[in-house]
Length: 309
Image (cartoon, rainbow, N blue to C red; front, side, top):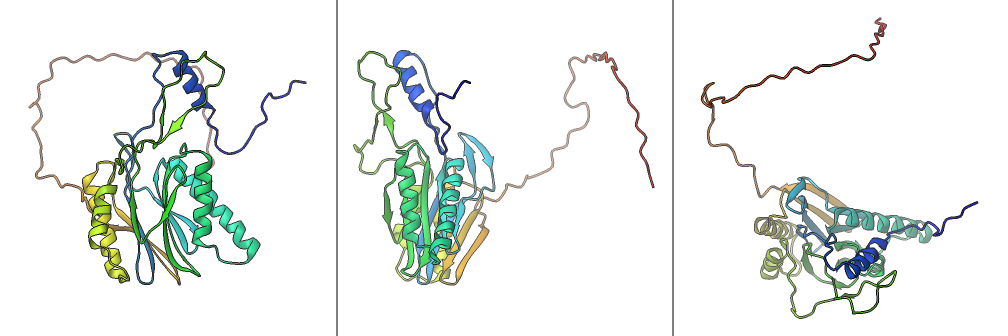
């Protein structure tokens, strides 16, 4: 009996990346698919009693708006939530796997999960794939150590900050030119990070949101002030980037629990038509008119009686 050459494995598979790199080396004129720029604005900040997270609701596919009411605030644990920017499938599945692991961890230990534990699981998962999983995450929650806020980048680096904002950009890595060596079956994909610019362009509405947070953030803010600042930061990102839009969603996390606020604000209201445009029949002349009859042939006809009480 024939056996499989390669045993099936779970998780992500990046064999096509090796294939594309090999084809680019062998066929110099070949253009393989490249990463597309996506647009998102997510933000979070720590206030007096907890953490508040926010995100826009527009999901884009290059220049096409795929979803106007996308949920970008994902559940991890009862007091821990995560905002995701980047590839929608990557952020959804990465946060869902983290939520599953934290549920098993809580059942095994009998304790509430910690924010640092969630951050560690996420950054280890992303670092394992070296940036190929396009998920920029903001993790916020409250545990026994108080309110905490982390940002996790697609290649696995992270920071703990009092406030932050992220927006998805082009793939953070680029391929180096392949060396002049004889073609082989598999050419490793060489990944480097370009540190020529200390603040690489992040795209989307991150810049506008961070600028507003840096200007107006204060420690120990009240919930009302923090919520107002977060809405204004996300709104600034929406108005400065075409990839961000829709409504502003927020999630308030305190020691008593979490409250998800959908459509907290709508910065871009639909434009109302100024007047009615009605034209009389015959205004636009019809130059040609042609009617083509369709010849149809009935192959089988079945009549079934329906019983009616």
